[in-house]
Image (tube, rainbow, N blue to C red; front, side, top):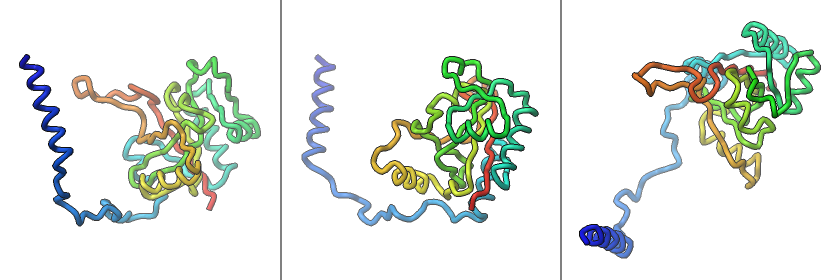
Length: 213
């Protein structure tokens, strides 16, 4: 009986609150201005600085050919023997530069590295926006211990709101089912405050930024 009485009291309070709506105590709040200070550096420099702060490995590339050479070095230097790639444009690039890769979904659990594109790069936080509409889907961002992202300087935006605006424009009302923001390699300190890398995803995150402006 007491539980029912308590429940009724709560429901009555909710009903009264819906009937007797209070006026907005802050009618002049301005929502359009940014809550952040302007960036002190250009967006490419800011992204590189913030990305490395969160343990990301940033590599600048002058052009596509330079990127292919540096990608080869990353794969060789880290002894990545089973590299996966699902995106057609990247597969063509890897084939052109004779970089071995796998694209069989059934073997993805054995992947040591995944090579993907991204949607946008968020300079202020050094973050990478990805979505389920990419051909790599949600798999290559999680399963392999090393995630290698290939991006262009034209994908750089200052803030999250800019990335969200652009992704809405890109897909014109048909948004991806999942839009994620990656900030550095996966990590956790839940157990005894000991930092563990790769707890819920890749231990290493590389970003190869190709100049295209």
